[in-house]
Image (cartoon, one colour):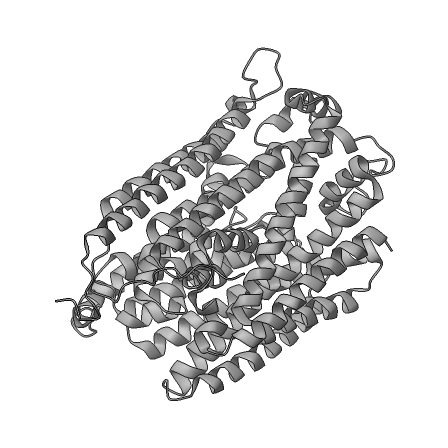
Length: 103
Length: 503
């Protein structure tokens, strides 16, 4: 239950890398994938019900749905790794201040 | 009484109570009580996040939806995944930087605190009580079916245990209850999916083929069916699921339990993985319920409906594949799930009352930490009592409506304010309150005149509003009103930009 001591958030004005553009691109990607799927649910249910292979039991909808799920997870993974690596890189450039306030 | 159920549940109870005792010795400060002192790791918090979402309604309700309609179960389940990447990309970092304990704190940084606290606290309590009653009613039904416990006793048992966790253990105990339960639920889902695959020689397509052959709708169960019909319904569900989680107070609070932004991101990512994996496992389990249970007189009646209601599908599958022992274990985990979720809700409600209303609004921050925690504990008691009373009152209602209300209000009243305050400098207090009220009122009105209440409860022939979730109208309305009135009132009321400058 005890955790190794981890760094707390630095006090306010110390800049963490903030990349709103990346946030919006990531959000747009997952929202687009999800709503594309939901629009097909709304407009083309017959297409989604059709089997992927002739006579098979797996439907196009199920295959697409699984792909969307996997895409959401991979998007979250890529984003988290990129951003957390950026935090580490930024932290490495900050010199120790020995308790003095940063300018 | 199922011995395996009792044994599994007693083990869960013993572990969680030991943690609660441990936590009670270590949570002295306000930040310990509300946010576990920021001491939870990203991985653990991810499990706890997943636990917050994976309620019994998800495990049992979605299993039932698969059994009756097939693919529609998947549509609802996927909706549970999409909220998490959004929280990760847009909310996690910004919320961490601005807030300390609650969403209301973040809003008050930039807006006039008195009206904002009153509004967001009321909206949060409304969301929490809807969610709570739906969970309590589900728990009562489950206990009645499994142990023959009456609704009153079951509500009292759940109410007492959650109060103990929250009052004595605060966020530390609540989080660990959630982590253990999420891990157990995931394990149960993995075993259940494995047993289903084992029965069909690990031929997934074979499970679908048998399900198609047995289900009265045949091949139609592989595509959208009777629950999600038409573009409007699909979009409305989609919007609710994308925006709802980011407006739920007990979820947002959890971002403050980790030590830094990095761990906050990691926790939302871990939650996405767990809920995504659960969604994929439910495909096997869901179609497995059709393939295994359909036509078996031990589980379904002559009309093909499940004995004891649709929610029993996952549990019956466990019984069919693993016998009484596995059924007992799964039932106990389902009960633990409810217990964990209501504990999280109770803590969020107690925090809203003690921190947002009592401490910051009534006392203006002049009380000591000890006084605030004491108020918080009493608030947990009061919230539990009100929940028990209300759930007894609503025990015969369709609880899905209540859960839909919670999500719709969260997506329509809280989410727009959070997004505007984080991303737009022009939001004013007048705009925020008016937009929030517009979203709240239109969401409730939309549900009232929608199919669940207008047709389902009041017995009218056709609904005035066609969709179960009103979010497609109420959320844009909240944004429009908030932005419009902010622009109109900008001269008189200081905007967020000015407040941000001051910070």
